[in-house]
Image (cartoon, rainbow, N blue to C red):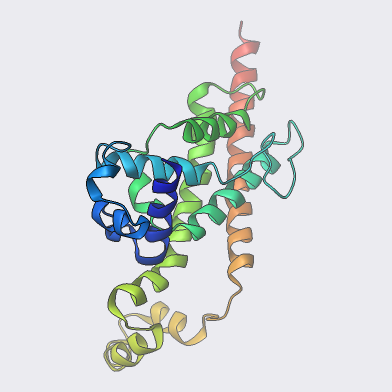
Length: 232
């Protein structure tokens, strides 16, 4: 079973998840296609196994990553570590994004990771909905950021057109539109924005902004909780 899942993951990493089929995996392993069905009943079952296996690649100990555990009780450090590990996994396996966007499988690694995410906010006096909301907010930021990171690579893989090719083809049109003067802020962005901003710096800064916002919300909820307690 592990060999089948490993082969499927390697194929998805190299060619995209659309390349994964029982026939293709059987060919990669040098076995008959029908022999795989003794271990995996459907392609959907295989995708679930693939997702859960890569979710287990993120070594999270006490809310930390393979860089080391985050301090117990430091919710920011714990969520930050989980976010960094999640992004690293998605960059290794960009096909995971599309599959987990709607209804992620509930394998053991996925459940363990969800428990750790909730655990990052445990002990702060929050209800379970708020605890989950904090975690999902961070995860949503990571998914959105990674989606933009992998978009160029995926576009090149799918179309063969590089970003420079795209800019050369779209450039004349954009110049004409901006010359009309209807989009002054967009024109300013096109001419003045930093095209070479460090991606790691951008991710780190964006993540801290999200955590800052959550800190404000945590303070608001704490004050509201104190107010309610004070009326009893």
